[in-house]
Length: 135
Image 1 (cartoon, rainbow, N blue to C red):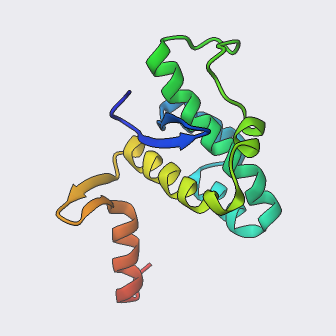
Image 2: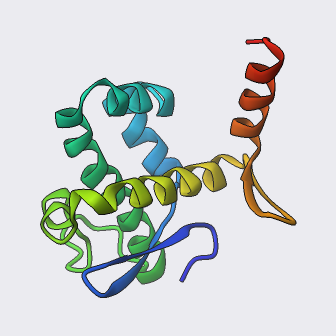
């Protein structure tokens, strides 16, 4: 399993969510950027119900393609957003989304380890600026 991502278990199988340049381009094409996607997630529950399975399948498929070396769309190991939606419960989505965002932070290089565990340095900086009143 590629160490550049975050593991997630779906339907009894462990997948590795990886945010590659190809995944970044997909996010850009669909939402403009990660912030645009996050805004859509926050906008309404119906939109989030479409985004979460799409994002999880996108990131898992990057890991699958890296592991198998097969980037063809007909790769039988690839999963679809519909498959993710079928094999997950809405109660699982917050955890899945957290792991997906951690994979994105790793891919963007904004993720590091501390004594307390992994830290997203961009999020850390935003929180520090919010606490001090800076934007």
